[in-house]
Structure formats: structure tokens, C-alpha cells
Amino acid sequence: MLQVNFLRDEKERVIEGLKKRHFKNLELVDAAISADDNRKKLQFDLDSQLAEMNKISKEIGIMMKEGRKDDAEAAKSQTAQYKESSKELQQQLNDAEKALLDILYQIPNIPYEKVVAGISADDNENIFQSTPVEGLGEGAIPHWELAKKYNLIDFELGVKIAGAGFPVYLGKGARLQRALVQYFLDKNTDAGYLEVNPPHVVNEASGYGTGQLPDKEGQMYYIGADDLYLIPTAEVPVTNIYRDVILDEKELPIKNTAFSQCYRREAGSYGAHVRGLNRLHQFEKVEIVRIEKPENSYAVLEEMVEHIKSILEDLELPYRILRLCGGDTGFAAAMTYDFEVWSAAQEKWLEVSSVSNFETFQANRLKCRYKADGKTQLVHTLNGSAMALPRIMAALLENNQTVEGIKLPKKIAEYARFELIN
Image 1 (cartoon, rainbow, N blue to C red):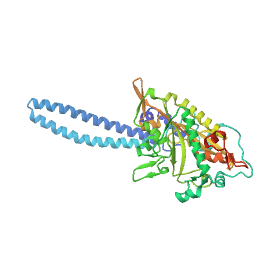
Image 2: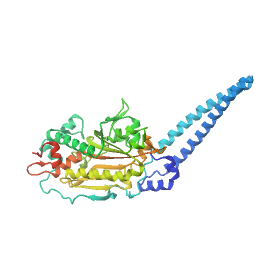
Image 3: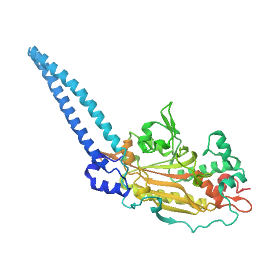
Image 4: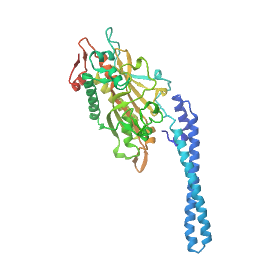
């Protein structure tokens, strides 16, 4: 969430940033400033009345000591009127604060200066590609057929148990999943990330804290009886560890990693692009989360990009890195890099990781701050997928198919304790 003072003081920059996103509701900026003016006026009126009440209360005691009973009773009556008026002002102030928040929740983050003003994924910048790509040629089959051929994943069984988008992993398929998770976690902890095992459900405050609510409410699974949400990513519970926390400067940077199941309704998704593991309702992912001082966050973002690159190099998969344009950047992010791996059998790119800097956008919602030199200010938050498993699994199966079977990359074979799926 953007700070209202930032909207006021940097209004021209805010409008230009929102235009870069092709955000249509620019009038919300003025609405937020106006709502804040109203809030400030009500706060001033309330503070003035409370101060007058305190003044009169002190005078009542003096009047009683001086025997001025009638004056004291009149003052008490005036105080009672102020109390009623103050209650009304407090309710108006509460309503005004809520109205301001409702507006601020609708305004996305401002893109970083390097982000170009594109409209869709077609306008994203390809900033790196590991190697030229090509299909496997005649006879290559997609991962859903390989999964059936080698009894690795049963998609129909998942439909029977839960519905489409909930696959069942079997045998070497399940072992490969487990090996990938362990490798990703080890890779992250070796890089200095503290492993966290968070809850897989969060409350409403946590959803608002990281920006899933109200922006992505329709994509989350909601447990009505308990007023909880299944997490779409470990980013949500891990980042919320630091909600309503004032950190000491010495505690920064904070580096966390977590494995979790992820749950996404993916409402409206259909067609060939959702076949097999391309898009699921439940999947496994390892996340990295950083809490940083503002002046360090963009250097850290590049460091995280290099970390993801090292993982993909170990997986021996062709990959590319995209810097998302304004129109394709997520609601809460200031800048995002997407990593895509090449699906040799499908002959298309599959997104497997996003690495984002949210600057103070999440921190302002979370009220996550740090203290340095006697001053308290908002931190910057960052996160990234390291990695999401379904499309990594799809690419590993498709790119490594041979006449003998599927030959795993050396690093993953060490973790899986088998080299060949046949």
C-alpha cells in the first residue's frame, strides 16, 4: 500500500507510474488525498474537543474547592455534551480512516524506473537467455504422456479424489518431487537463508498484509467456518512473521526460505495451456523472502536473480529471464523478473519463478519497520520462487527423454538416488 503522504507529495510521479501500468482509475489518487484531508480535519476537531474537556475537568475541581457549586454543575453539563459529541466524532473518524484505507487498497504499487510501459506479457523485456532452444524432434511426447508411460503422475486419479488440477504423484514421480524440494531447500540454506516451516492457512490480516487481499480474493480458497484462507504461496505466512514488528537495524538483512503446498483456484483458466502440470490448483513450491534496508533492496534483487540462475544451471534446463513491463507487473510489486524454462516437447516457455521487489508497499500494510539512529522507517520486502515444482518437473521430463528413458541431471540424480526413469 502506498503511503498517503507519498501520494500527496509525489503526485505527478505517482500518476506517471500508474500510467506506466495502464491503471485506469487515476481519480483514486485525488480521492485518497481528499479522504485524508477529511480524516485530518476530524482528528483535529476530536483532539480539540478532548483538550477542551480536559481543561474544563481541571477547572471543575478548582470551582468545587472555591465553593462555586453552580458553576461546577454547569461545567459538568458542558463536559457531558462534549463527551457525546466526541463519541460521534470518534465514529466519524473511524469511518473516515476506513474509507481512506479502502481507497488506498485499490491503488497498485508504482513501477521502478527500469520498468518499461508495456501493456501485456508480449511487451516484457528478454534480458537473458541461457542457450538457443529447439524442439526434440519427431517422436518427442509431452510430460503428461511421459507421466502416464512411466507411471509417475496419475491425473485421472486426482480428478476422482478431488477434481481437475490435483494430480497424484506415484513411485519415482513422488521421489523426484521430494528430491527437488530437498535440493531447493539445501541450495537456499547454503546461501544463508533460514528455513521456516509456516502454517498453510492464514487469517484475513495476513492476506491484506502481503497484498493478496483484496486484489486476489477470488483466486484464494476460503474456509468460511474458520475465516481462514489456504495459502497461494509461502510468501504470505513467512512475510507476515514480521507484521507489526519494529526491527533493530542490526537484525537486517533477514533471509528466510520455506517449502509449502500452494493452493490457487485459477478461476477462468482453461484450454491447452492448462494441460498436465502447466497449471494446477495444488502444487509444491519453495520460496525465498528477504527483509532489507531500502538502500540495499535493488542490489539484493539482482543477487536473488543470480541465485535462481544458479539453480537452473544445476537443473541443466534452457531458461530465459524477463523483466516484466508495467502492464504485466503484479499489483504489489515495483519490479519483477520472471524465469521461464523451455518445454522441448510442447515447444514453448514455461514460467517457473518470479522474483520481485515490493519496496515499502507490503511493509506499509504490514507495519514492518526498523529503527536506526533513533529513527523508525519502513523496510523493503522482496521474495522469489526457488522454485515452483510443477513446470520444473514438466521440463525435466520433456527435455531429458531418450530412447532408454528419462535421464535426470547429475545434481538431481544425487538427491533422487536414481539416474534413469524407465
